[in-house]
Length: 214
Image (cartoon, rainbow, N blue to C red):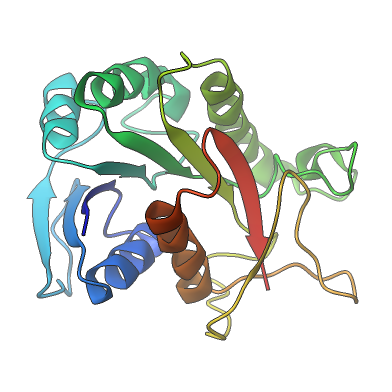
């Protein structure tokens, strides 16, 4: 069993991953800026932000797997990519696998592109968050070879506003958005978490981004 430390462990994606990991017997530590309203008995909760180098250092030292499940555009006033160098260094120094809950915007709508965020129908209000997550992905791809990482992009419809159905199944792709035959693209929080924890356990996508959907 692994010790999994999650930044954003009380958010939508982070709490789903935490719940799934704890159900499998993993030790889970959640970092967030506020205590959860409904804590899980199987988890340890700590207050702290990845914007703090001391918090990142302590988190990595306690982890086998370091999961980042936070907003891309604004983490304590700066984009997530701002803090990537310290996350990478902490992960490398401790031999920890670093992983990210990414956005759907950087996924390709078809093999060869374009990215979803670059299509005409992508809502302008969503672009800052999508582009911020895309910057993290590109930075990871340039990271030193000894950094073990993975990055998961959900389907287009994903979030607390659309919790979806728990099916116990999911499909994956490399960089392409996972869609159904009717062109829709969705994944529930529970099934996204299933895919994420499967990757933690199986190590099937070393130093890769993969996409997930129903």
